[in-house]
Length: 235
Image (tube, rainbow, N blue to C red; front, side, top):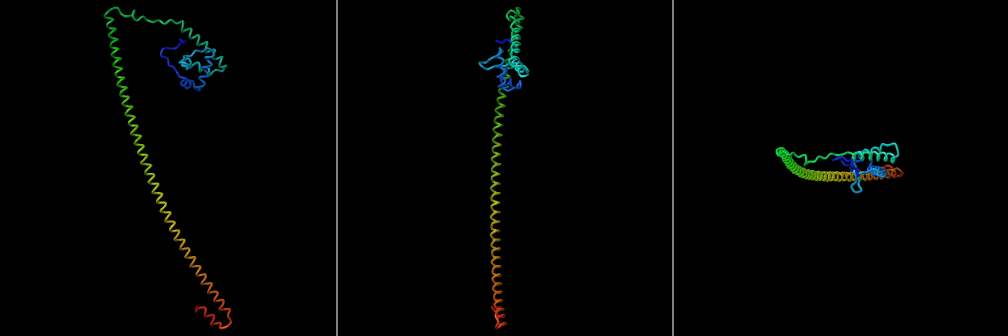
């Protein structure tokens, strides 16, 4: 079991390690498998690896190495074993709390007073934290209400805007339809006038043709030359 972990040392997930090292999450798993295959030891939560700062440094070494990954992994395993051996040979002095308590009642009373003051301060801090949490919950609740009001206002404004757009679109459509109808009426009147002009012109042409025929017939008759000629104007 690893004994080189410091107290309160931060633990990283695979995703956090990937962001920290600058590699993909599958690459983190690949490097972890290479290290374990060569004897490296990770902290585990079931089958899930838990990374600490020294593990991140090992992954960086694998990322930047120019040697085969297994060779670099073996070097890292050797460094880890040396670090674990140094940790196991270090004696940690734990003070005997009860033996170090003062024997003098006055000193003991002072120690107890200090502890009582610290306990009171801790309780006061807990009360303050509780109040802060309540205030935070109240602020969050107000923000949620404000968000609901803003959302409702935006929704109402959007509905009004859509209604105005629909009204303007309908009015514009009606205006265009009216203009189109007026243009159609003008076009019909113009067509009728053109037709009347064509009919009038046709009548004029027919009248002129009739006159020309009578004139030709009158000129061709040998007898009663002048009487035939004048008869054209009597008709």
